[in-house]
Length: 179
Image (cartoon, one colour):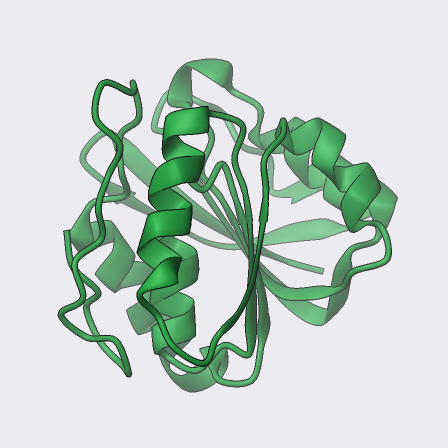
């Protein structure tokens, strides 16, 4: 897997071995960033269930000023740290804990873009969006990208967030929310 575009284009993203994660495909990543276009530059990004950190790193490559990665799996954390260690001049933070526990540590932060990519079997997108709303960790006009299985039913409105676009890629669906 490689960074698609921007300052770090072509940099290889290492994924952890022997971990049951399914990294966001390059097709889905490209679709997300085609939607964002230049709206990443200067933004603060939160990558929840970060896995290898590919979405946050892609954001940094495209000019995000900061990326925070939340992941609980030790092998994934090692991959994220290795992947960001080769990037120069970026502001990152890696939080090694369960996403729901991490919200308490993030409550003083504000993000413009949030990526939510939990294991499909967990079906937690609604719960994560409600926690984000509860902890009020978004700036004005945020964009939240939730990646989930096509069988997970996602409402048009969850808490303060409204579904603005939904696109399917095989078994994967990207649901985009804003406040």
